[in-house]
Image 1: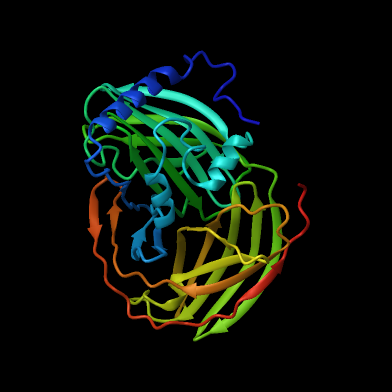
Image 2 (image 1 turned 135 degrees about the vertical axis):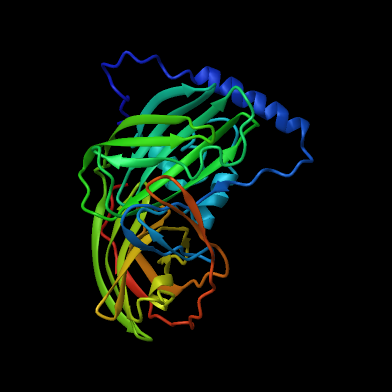
Amino acid sequence: MKKPFNENSTLPEFPRDEVRTAIANGIKQAEEQKNMTQKPVQIKRKSKRKPLLYVASAAAAFSIMVGSAAYVSPTFASTLSQLPIVGSVFSNSGYLGLKQASEQGLTSTIGEKHTINGISVTIDEVLYDASNITVGLTIDSEKKLGDYYLGAGPNFTINGKNPKVSSGGYGEKVLSSTVRTGIARFEVKEDMPDSFEMGLTLEGKEGEKWEFSVPVKKITNTIDVPVNHQQQAEGIQLDVSKISLSPTGIALDYKASEKGTIDNPHIGASFIEFRITDEHGKEITSHSGGGEGHFDNGEWNFSSTKSFDPISSNVQKLMITPYLVIPSGGGGVHVDIAGVETKIPFNKPCVKEVKFQPFTVELPKQNK
C-alpha cells in the first residue's frame, strides 16, 4: 500500500491543486507555441567517490567514472520525453513498470515540498524494487528556469551514508518555462536493507540546496528465478545468475569477465546487453541499466542488473539472447568531492562483434 511521508508529521499537505494550476498554465503556453520544437529531455552523468568503471549500454556512451555514476538509457529518455502534461509523474511516465507500480499502490507517496528562492521541489513518489530505487519529483518556479538548473539530479545517501558504488540516471520533462517533472533512478551495487531512510539532495545553479529525508521500503511481491547460465564466447566468460519478476518489471543479474590490460577497459565484456522474448515471440522492452567493473590479475570483471518491462502472468518461458551494443558516441561528467565537474570525452572503442548462444528460462506459474 502507498504510505504517507510521516503519519505524525505536521507538514502541510502537498498542494497538488497549485501544482496542477501551474501545469495548466504550461499547457496554455504550449498551445500558443505549437510550431516550436519541444525541448529535449535533460540528461547528465555524474560520478564521485570510490573508483568505478561504469558501462553505458545501448549506443549511448562509455566512460570510466570515479564513484557513483548517473546514466539514463535511450528508451527511458524517450518515454520520459513523451510524458503527458497532467497527472502523476510515475503513472504518466510511459514506463510500464512505474505505471503499474503506481496504479497498484506499490509506491510510497511522499509529497514533501521545500521552497528556496521561489523554486519549489516536491518529492512525489518513490519505488524500491529488485533493480532500482526510483524517485519522481516536481519542480515549480516563480521565475524561468534555465537548462540543467538542478545539474545532474539528486545525490542520495542510505541511512546517512554514501553507497560505495552506485549507478543510475536522471531525466526531466519541461512542461513550461517554470514547471518541469523529473525521474531519478539509482542502482546500488552492494547489499541493501529492505527498508531504510534515503537522503536526497538537489543543488541549483544559484547555490540553492534542497534536502529531503525519505522513508523507503522494498516491494515484497518479487519472484526470484534462478538461472545459473554460463557460456564462453570469443574470450568472454558470461554468467547470468538469476532474473527477478515483479509488477515493476524484470531484473536480470549477470557478471562477465575478459582478459585485458588495465589501461584498456574498452573490451567486449563491458558492452553486453540482452534481448528477451516470450514464448509467443513478443520482445520485452529493455531499459538497460548501469554497471560496475574492476581490473584484477590481468582480467576485467563486470557486473550489472538489466531492467525490462513487466510481463503478463500467462508467460511461462523466456528466450534470452546476449549481444554486444558498441557505442558510437557519448561521454560523461566526473564530479569530484568539491562538486567540480569535468567532462569525460568519448573515445570510440575498437571491439569486434561477438555471437552468444541464446538460452531459455522456464518461469513458475504466477497468480493471475
